[in-house]
Length: 418
Image (tube, rainbow, N blue to C red):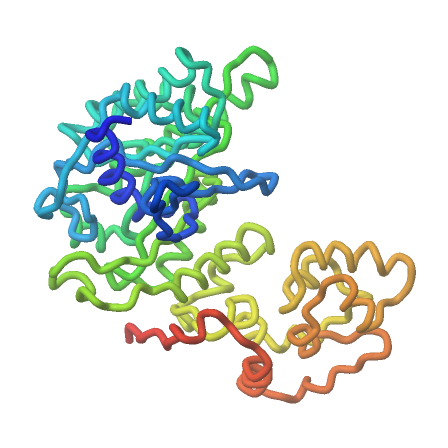
């Protein structure tokens, strides 16, 4: 690798770290004295496939030049930073060379906007096309879709990439207008709508004509920045539910805003990154996707903010004590999976196991149930509920007294908007 390409990699991998559409180890261990491996700003992150495999991705921007001046973005045109841009061939060569050295299993490619949306999108598509057609590359490719790009370019991107994503950036339209007045929520939604329709159309055609090519087989996703525009958790979670429902997204990612500029519209530099809030949002997202919860059950007009000291499932249970205790040996799956301390797999095991006889508390422990939480919300053979007359506040204190969280040091109560 030439010094010039290495310098570009250093700049554009660092600029890509703010995009959390895949997770990163966060390590900064550098390679000194010709050692083995290097985790210092290397641009390699990890993502997970649907079957749980962890894959390493080369995560870079094509460029950090940008025509937009979004207040929350480190690559905004008014920011005085070192700029760089890869050529199409440089990204292709990096991907192939890293793959052959077994550094990576795929590519995660985003970009600032060079001249306009089509000019940038055309280069992103060219990289994916070269990898697929010239190098027969079958590794994972995730491309960012540039709002405003033509449908023809978005269509081609879907033919070569595994996943496409359009970032909503700010959860509310009002927040976007405030912090990125040159951008339009409507312009972001158009490619998402197009992708949804094309993914459905290609799937239907493949059922009839087996030779129909795949189109974005890993679906589409989006990302929202949290804590930059004063939005409530209700806004965020209801927005996520809307896009899951209307656009069949595979994932919504939440990125706690990292203060990067002196701008009166944004939290001050040095403000704490809302990591606990980000974690609670991911837990809420998990409840909607796998536990059958609706956004309105998690946050609503009465409870617009998530509890930071307990997870959203426990918070919901404490607000709905009239539904408990639940009889483990009689309740259906949809109720059992809502009990704090019982996950999807444990709930399925309970349904299977009770066919052979009523379950006791010791049986539940063996099935993976977190008894220290579940015991406040269940009854089963030989176990009567002793906490039914306790208030939600009391039960919350009992549970917190027995718990330890890696987030406790950063925990703080959210400020109310009202």
